[in-house]
Structures are given as structure tokens and as C-alpha cells.
Length: 116
Length: 114
Image (tube, rainbow over all chains, first blue to last red; front, side):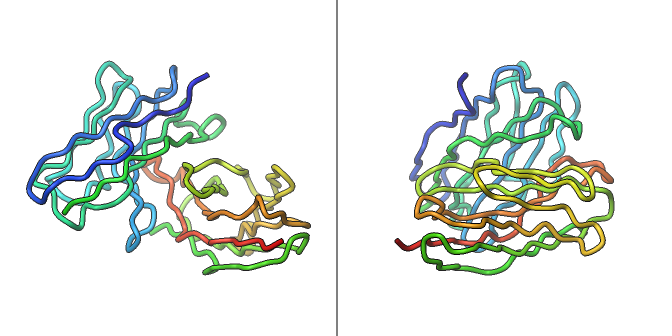
């Protein structure tokens, strides 16, 4: 079956512009995660969705970052008024559940964001 | 807070050499432990995992044993190949807290030369 897909694969934007990054998780996966991979910070957790529960936003670096998940499937990560330090690869992952037994997270290919 | 420490790279080996990449962790709860691999130009893939103490995860000739007494999860392979060249990330998921995030180490670049 299809894996996690993300779009666009690359995004170049100017400082101050807003961007939207999309994630399509594996069908049937109830848990969805966003991470950021950057040279200075390594792999960082951003936000987590589990079913209809309130998302865990504890990793979002500022209020310019937000995410939503519509219908328990597709998710969009929005960065407003982008800054150069937002340049990174944004990774989406999904898993069947959040429980220990079936919690393997499957990652998408990522969106490489470059802020000029 | 929870954290993962792994050996810095790059690690450069000749084909058929023995590989060890060290990983130690700090966790408040009782975590599951993972090794992810990122091949050049590709996304993160799960390599292996272990969910409780003394469990051994294995895949593609790689192994790692969950050692609670030393809080370690070292990755080993008896004979590496050029195709194993990649970045390897150790990670944990701690079930003691309210969040379900993966916490990653900084990654170790492995370069295998023919």
C-alpha cells in the first residue's frame, strides 16, 4: 500500500511569506506527527495528532507555526511570516495507534523548505 | 528531560568490517527504543526496535539489545556493505509522560568503502 506522502517536496519562499505543507498519512493510521530536521537542531518533534483528541502542540517553536488535521486524515502545517531559521526539512509520520504494541512511526519523504 | 546520546560520526569502515554505533538514553518512564536509518536522498525508515528490557531488535543483519542496566541500545552489524552507507538515528519513545513523540539522537553518518 501507499506510504506517507508529503507535498510539495521542495518549497522556496521569501522571508515574511506564509507557507503550507501537506501530509497524507497511511490509510487507517490514527496517529500523525510532524517533525523538523535541521542542521543545527537535529530531528525535533513539532506536533502530534491522535484521533479526535486535542493535539499535543508542545514542540511548536513559536505561534507562527500551526497545524490542523481534517477528517482524521490529511494534515497541513502552516508557517506564517517565515524566517530564515525556519529553513529545514519538515517530516510527517503516522502510526496505527499510540499504544506501545503498534506504535511504529512511518515517515514521509519530507518537504525541504528554504526561506530566502 | 528525556534524551538520547549517540556517538558522533562520521564512521568510516571498509566493507565486511564490524560495526558498532553507541547509543545511550535518559528517560523518566519505561521507553521503547528504535533505530532509524536515512539512506542518501531518502526518508527515514525504521531499522529495528525493542519495547522492553533485554529485547533484541534485528533487521537486515543489524542488531541492538535493550539494556536497562546500562541505559543503552547499541547498534551492531557483523559485516557491513557499501549499501549500508547512511545516517543512523537512535530514538526513544517514553510512555511515562503525556506525549507520544520520538526523541532522536543527533545521528551518525556511516560511510562504507569498498
